Amino acid sequence: MSSMTDLVFLLLIFFIVLSTMSNSELEVKYPKSDAEAQPSKTTTINVAISEENTYFIDNKEKTYSEEEIEAYIEKEMTKYKAEGKNNAYVRLHADAASEVQYLVGLMSYLQIKEHKFVLVTKQK
Image (cartoon, helix red, strand yellow):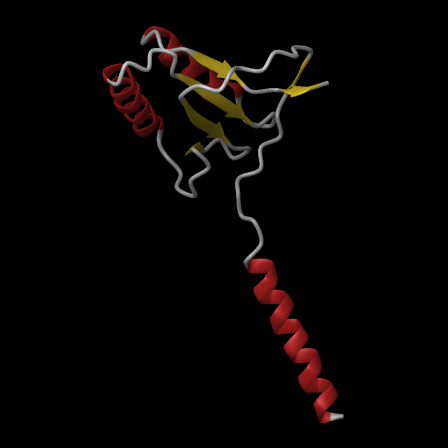
């Protein structure tokens, strides 16, 4: 009976370790759209707004403030323009459950700075 208990604990530990090693990438539920066009492969900066209204850059685990996002975008876009990559743009990944003000604020900033951007949606 003791060996059966050991086996159960080993399996329990195995599944706990396995579940913590699973993919921890940010999952974003996209709003739906009828558009079919996909942007061509160019230089992009991916900014995600999670359901909890936190910002992520290129799926990094760190959350960013609005000011940090703006500074990062400005630095990267300046770098791309210096390299002659004038087709660079920002891809906005906003969770459908996130508050609109966070998305609108970021879009306003990008428009004021005249940076190209697209809003990623899920096809209906």
